[in-house]
Length: 303
Image (tube, rainbow, N blue to C red):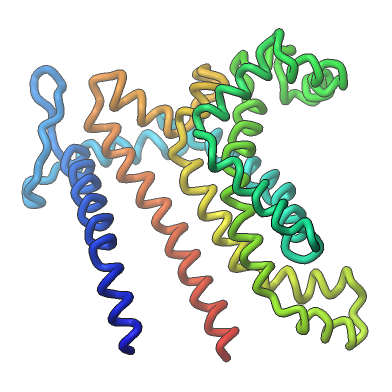
């Protein structure tokens, strides 16, 4: 109890700092989204909840339901995010599993390689991709030599050979590249905590390696999978700069691009803030599901 109080004392300033400025910033967004505009369409925040106006919020909801103005963008965003998450999981889980269970004396080097992407700015890594995938870039030439562009064109995932010419597949690849390290690290931590004796007990009871993986390792790594999915899905949902750098075409716009256009490039700043509130509410539901699942998993382990 004494240690908890001491560490709580040290953590309090940081928690107050983060909480205070998050609350202030988000309340400003709410006040603009539930406010009004003047004759020049400049937002007039309503700081008093009694004066809140739900008109822009209703308009935001109507725009993202089937048949709404932004419904196609919502569907496209969901497809991009689910595709990027599936690819990231297919790439990240084997890497995390190898690093935690089989890397041996190379374990430290593998962990360093997993952390290296965080040493470079996300924007700079995206700029590197634009140079690689430019029509005269090395990456584009390699993909063309391997006929990957022809394969993707034949199945309708690539329109022509210009990877930066408004291609959805390029946006998905960039999302995977940018966020997969955030998925691997919690997976590595979760897999590393699995007691080797539990796996050995499963094999002693006659479970072959494949069965022990599906029935022991994979279920026990579920909290790490969920943590990784939360870390990549939440920022992907509001991401707009990846699409802007890798495509810039309205045909590949995500919901983050729509919000950014409303707030930065148009007169509908209040509508953009209302859509931010709506997106935050959806992501909050996802976060609550993760916390509920994590608590249930922890309760099962404690029992």
